[in-house]
Length: 484
Image (tube, rainbow, N blue to C red; front, side, top):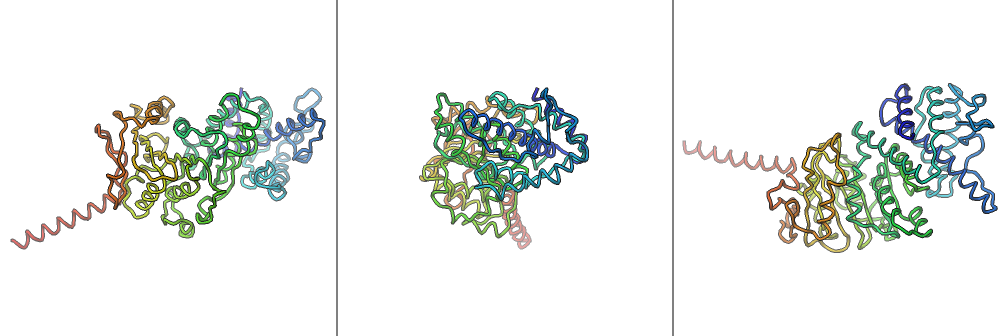
């Protein structure tokens, strides 16, 4: 039922002049799902209050509640078409009354961790792009048929929403920035083994895939107490996101996974000065796939001890700083980070090796990230003690990966098992840090069994070598000419 509903919504939005891509379909579906969810949440809260002999005060005023404007019902519980808004009347109500009203909650909220603040933040960042009020009426009726009341319903909806995010990621680079393959995330979490009571952080949260998978991992543990469940809901998962669409998707994704008021802040993480970070700001676990390839302005770089324009390298410094002593991290980054010869890369590798135990590097093959040609590695680290030995695993699923052959959980099973004991195998080996060049801190390593190098040299390093060879050739030619 849910799958067909999502397909029908996409079909309607595809016909609308205001929605032109998968990104638009996901964005517009998100705000509608959020308001339907909010209506279900309000009904549940009212029922709970009544059973306890209390009075529940709704968040929304009557005229802005779902049952009044989106899906008014008659006595039979069917949509009352005599009192429904449609066409231009519906579009005008949504654009000129509903959205401004919801946007105002940000100023009225008691704090950023409240559902009221999330309402204001979401509707302050997006707008209704559905240009036809008749198309909007059709979509509203489909969304009204969706149910969020049971855990089974939420679970199925969350899987379908994840599929929409994945499709959005495949549709283009902007969407792809929000999507990390879920099998890879699950393997990272299995290695980290988070515990209830630990605080988990992603400062480049995207669609909140890391936080949602960590929630699924922790909430599936048997025999959780009411207090532990409350800890998971309110004091475990934290994220920051710069982009408006990703912020909205992250909020909706976490809600569908079962987290009522996600601790996601809409902010530019890199605009924060690292020198201002205090112990109370730090986390037990960092799980992240920061965007790479971006270029940050000089004023942003001033927030970091090691200046670089590469977004991912700034994020790596941020994550190291945000970890508590003894805290663990699993971070996706370009594989060229292991061997880049520029000053910033060398300095960050030195910082990493001296302040953290970089115990594991997972080398991911091309095609791991659909639509992105760049190769990546996952860095597993523990803060507080220097690195003595690094264990490498070269992931090789034995096939070319892509949209029709994506990464799956079985591909990573051997890695997760061997990592427990840092075992050697045809795909895994260890590197003694004492053996690396202290001038470069080059962490690339060749598989002793003849596998491909974990990281290739950067274009800059290759160009430098070519320049040296050219100079040597010129000297040789000059000598030859002198002899002639």
